[in-house]
Structures are given as structure tokens and as C-alpha cells.
Amino acid sequence: MRADRLVSLVLLLRQRGRLTADTLARELDVSTRTVLRDIEALSAAGVPVYAERGRHGGFSLLPGFRTELTGLNHDEALALLTAGSGRGELVFGLGSALASAMRKVVDALPEGHRAVASDAAQRFLVDPASDLLSRRTAADDETSGTVLTEVRRAVLAGHKLRIRYAATDETPRWRTVDPIGLVTVRDRGYLLATRAGADRTYRLSRMSAAEVLPEAAERPNQVDLDRIWRERSARFLAGGEHLTVLVRVDPARREELLDTALAVRAEESGTDDGWVRLEVTFQDARHAEWALWQLGPDAEALAPLSLRTALHDRAATLTARYADPSVR
Image (cartoon, rainbow, N blue to C red; front, side, top):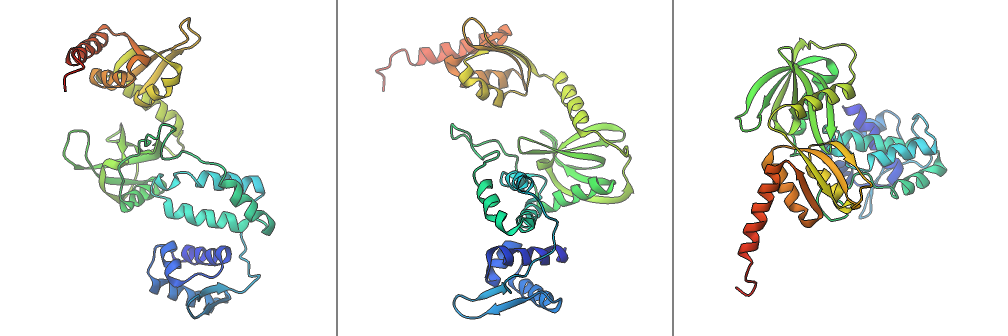
């Protein structure tokens, strides 16, 4: 909306001082011509924006000009700035809204607290793109902003939603659903919905198009997304061809194992050998074999026997292949 953009423009000038039209256009994701029109609108509304020409010119606000925004104390602002400093742009396509909100948070602080809070937020890192082993954390495939906008609109307005969705190993096709809410887990976004009265969960990255329909969605007025997500997760793990594995693992590799598993059903630490025993669920036997093989001698599958046999056979094949290390 233009009103939000005008507020963001004023906040940018307040917090950064003189900025060129090109810089403002990049920050606001609009054209330079739009920025110039917005500057004219602000001036007409009495906001003291003035232009400085020349090589180091640009647009500025008169010193001392301040917008009226709700104040925040230091810890409240720090909490919001820290949360917004992570990978929030990946959440439901709200990146531009997040950037605008962060500018408002900084501007709402008392003059003497702005620099302190901004510096403090730089000392915290939330959900980085890689772990200590320099492995990239798994991120969902990018979903178009138009699709995410339509999905959000349907969820918030309580309208039916028509989506073009590609399920696993299927060609994309249109579905009409009743949206309940949105969930993000490890940078993967999901739409919780019902379809013809049946529970459905859709991966946002598998949607290629979405359209809000005028009809009201059939859904309860109040919703507990956390409870719904737990129930659907439990049903997902209980069905299909998922494989439950009992494994012992070196504590130093525990997190690496959990990164590959679908779920942890039980865990026992403090064993005599110092290793951790886990009962974990994998997608299928092939997934379990791959995950345990990555851990090499730092993990051992204790059950089922079929998995131990598969790992034994793979190790035997590799041993035979390298029986003579001198072969080049």
C-alpha cells in the first residue's frame, strides 16, 4: 500500500540521512519515478523533505523532524530486532514487510537508545544459513511472492482457496481447499487446510499458483495450530512405510543424526559405553540406510535386522573393492 511505502520512505530518511532517489527505489523495491512522486506527495502533506543537488546530493528531512510512532523500551526493541535479523524473509513471503517493520522499531526508540539497540542486535545470530560444519541448512524451494500473498489473504480473510499443487510424484493439478493456518518448520512452509471435510497439509513450495475465492471457508472460528500440527505429525508418522530404527550414536554426532531423521520416539543417555541410544523414524529403509552410512563408525543400527544386514552388505562390498590399496 502507498501509505505504508510513504512511512517507510520517511523512516529511511530519518535513520540514514541523505539518500539518493536510486537508493530509495532499491530499498522500497519500486521505480525511481515512483520515489519522486512519493517525495512530492510527502512535501504536499507538510513533511519537510528537501533535495540537495550535485554529486553528493539526494533527499533529506529537516533536522529534528520526527514521526509519531508507539514507543518501545530497550528490551522490547532488542527482541524484535533480533527476531527480525534471522531468516525471517523466508517466512510466508513477508520479507519486505519485515524490513519495513524493523525500520519502524528502530524509529520508535528514544534517541539515545537507537544506536545501542541496533548494535546489540548485531551481537545475536538467529538461525544462520549453515551450521558449525559449514553444511548449508535445508531451505525449502522458493515460492513466488504472488502465491504466498494469495495464500496469506485466504487464511486471514477466511475464504476458500484454489491452488495448483504438485504432490509427490504427481503432475500439478488444481484443488479447492478451506485454509486453516500457516506453519513453518525448519524453513519449510506448510498450509494446514481441509478439503471436502478431510484434513490436508500442503507444502508451500509445491504450489505454482493460488487464487482466493469469494466463498467463505468452512472452518472453526477459533484454532489451536500447535495442537493441530502435533496431531497431523503423529498421523503422518504412524502411516505409510516409515521405518523405526533403534540406533546407538556417539554424542558428538547426535545432532547430525537428528537432522536426517523424521522424528525421535525415545532417547536414552548415560549408557555404559557413553553413547546415546535413540529410537528414530526414517522415511523408509533406503532413507535409514543412507543416514546411518553417513555417520560411519560413529553410529550403529541395533534394529531392525534388515537394516543391519543392508549396512553389513554395503560395508563388505566396499571392503572388497579396496582390498588391495596399491591398485591405481
